[in-house]
Length: 318
Image (cartoon, rainbow, N blue to C red):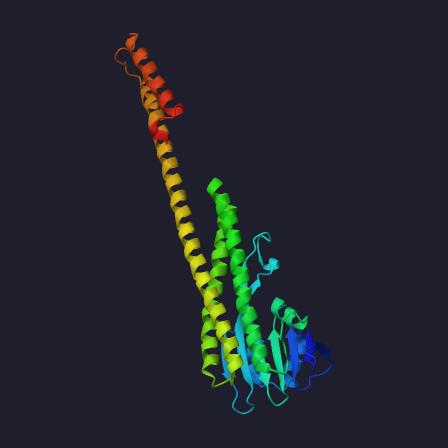
């Protein structure tokens, strides 16, 4: 899908039918024809188009000396597609790149997202304050700000899911809940890796060589850096807590297994005593005291002790 927006003099952003100076071209989940348009008619250099259409690209900034075009790729958080999950009830998170391309010869800015994106939807719906498609640098920084805030939003969601799952695990160690915890751990790894790459990209923008920044732009960039670092700290804290909790539950599982094995060992030993005694009766050898009441008495005492050990709550079974 390709949509074009432009902010008029009244500060209202509306759709337009063709790229014009000061416009924003939004390309979301492009089909084959729209990918061909990017490669042949958009005016974007081929290397930037290839990078924008690569779902495995990481956050970075690039500059083309011949056309003065600028490519900024930022990793954006997203909810993993339920079709890719074995269990749709498990909500997990992933990241995917958003490409922002400055095309100075046409005086436009182009964004490319290979999947539907909530952030770009908010921009298209006019939900972002002080949005102006003509001020390309400010538009870029606003996108980066929304990305950092989206990370924080999803990290808080991960925290809430973790707390709910932990309460269930305190009552019963079910495999489903442990799998949920592993899914959250994987999401935090994706977030931590992408946030560090985003931070490095912001540091390059802050240098001011590739993108010229005004004083107002620098203030907004400082806010973006603060939000990104806060998201990084949140991801690190939640990762440490989750890892510690998983280690603790692993120790509990091992301890429970040890207790179960000890109980089974005790039961096996206790039940082995009567087996050994009765096995003597299968031999063609005369047994001592076989004609006396003493042997049956001793056997009854041993069986009674075995029954007591098996069915009473002694310290051996705790």
